Image (cartoon, helix red, strand yellow):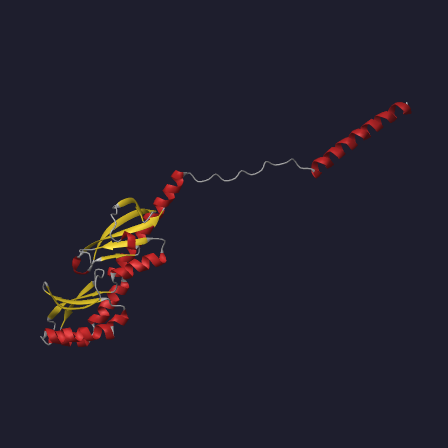
Length: 236
């Protein structure tokens, strides 16, 4: 009887060793994993969609910036700072336009220009009686000027930005070129010289100086209600 039992133990021991060695082999050599797939290259449609989204976002940014320059907090703050000038009110109260013009022409380069004033106007009715500053500026902030006795002296208009300043700001801070055209050849400003007189679509694409640009546009006003068109150009 002992001779019959002994072989069974040997066989069982061999089986256990086989299982153990198999587990050890599995632990030592994990199954190979498939190599990760390389990300798919963006399709032409995806690239075009991304470009379109970018140019629309940049155009919205340009619109907001123009609005800030025309009636943002700084624009109105500067307007009221000039409007509180007692010398200006005295000059206008004198009844002499020559006196008022002399005062404004002296104050603009000496003081107001350093407050970031680009243009100052005083309008009485529909007539511009005082005007000093740089040409082609964005639409001004406005207020009514009154004498100490409450008499209306005129409407003060102050613009804190010329159009080329707006163009340079956008071009310097964002990946775009900007073209602004008003009325007449003298009222054209561009960060891309080749685009200054180029035919530009209101929306779409254009090739300028051998480069392709996505194009968007919007309408604004400059000093005196002059209509202007602003084009935003982004390569792609």
